[in-house]
Image (cartoon, rainbow, N blue to C red):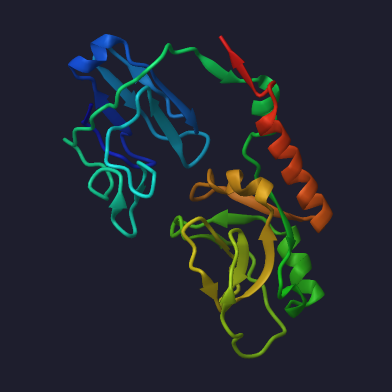
Length: 256
């Protein structure tokens, strides 16, 4: 399988050229953001993402690379795993692994798709320093609409909009931070810590995105607009349990 296009959210997308091994009838599928897939006898072309930041190409048999820590994925910051520890380039050749067993088409039910659709209102619990922010600042935070900045990445989702002020003077001692923490740096513009976040931070955290909404964070694109909704701990746990119950439900997937 040869990469013959560019990989970028707003560029020409990915093009994969099939080699002789595909004559055995390998199956290719995708999920995540819509990407306008077009096919021909030897080519699969994916266009720009339409409904989110990320889409996923699944190939029967998997991509045959040397596993790192039990995974075939690539960690770009450290240059480990995947194909030579880097992003794909034009001309790269990816080998396909052995596929065993028969393929049966599986799709999510309409109910599951509706319940798992990406949200633009992120539910949050109060952060550990929420009392550092005056009531007026917290009101502004929850009533404002924020845009996702171009500088956002897998470490942090930077937001543009109303700046949030704090009553605290000076800097706090660095402490451990959690996935989804909403930090307020000196400029007052929120940063949501994402999957490649640092382990400690010295900025006050006004809120934390709940675990049930992490999937929505992963599909945010630059210029998307979001808001925040405060929920209590009990509600956050209930929403996570409800999502986990859906994932474990036999009614989640329909087998053709």
